[in-house]
Length: 257
Image 1 (tube, rainbow, N blue to C red):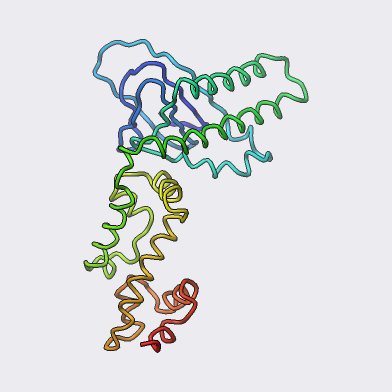
Image 2 (cartoon, helix red, strand yellow):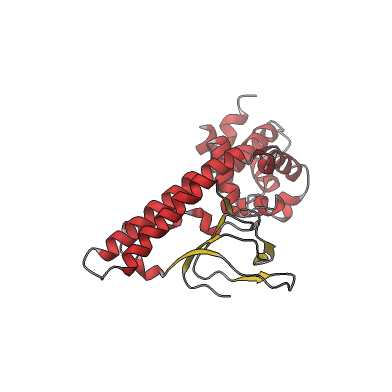
């Protein structure tokens, strides 16, 4: 199925696994699944008959063009979440979701007037705001699922710089790290932000600078050599980032030894 709409599913029964690209969604009873325009999904089941049951909110991107919600839609990163990253609702949260669905349904059934679009979009925005809160709660309460992600991320970066990957691949990217940890880039980035207060990119840069500061003390290598060893295509990019993060150029820092 190709979706040209923003789509939010609230499933009431389990009726097959949802495939999102090459991955299977963590798609159980009482979960919310978010799909953005342009994404392709399919439903797989064992062939047993079932009666789908649930509620969906579906709206076209044109609805929110020119609105405050439209200008900030990219902030709702859960529309980019993938495998095993659906929103698992408590009963209270489920009631809040259904309440907003009901408000939006009321506006759709009401005779269209000058207030209709504003009220519909406002309710969608409030609903998505609650979803942000619920995901924040999930990051905290699903410790077993997330346990060790930060430690694994740190180990992944350590192993990266003990290999020849920087010379063959370049600097470790957020997308690459997320893939190695079996997470989507958006979910991984949000999780690291919640855990550390830094973006995943900032965390990676801090790690690269830690490695760089250690290697700069090796006077047998030029700054350019070190830059290439770290995965920078151009030494000047390394120098610029080093000065930005450390407050001194690599050569100034090297003079401290």
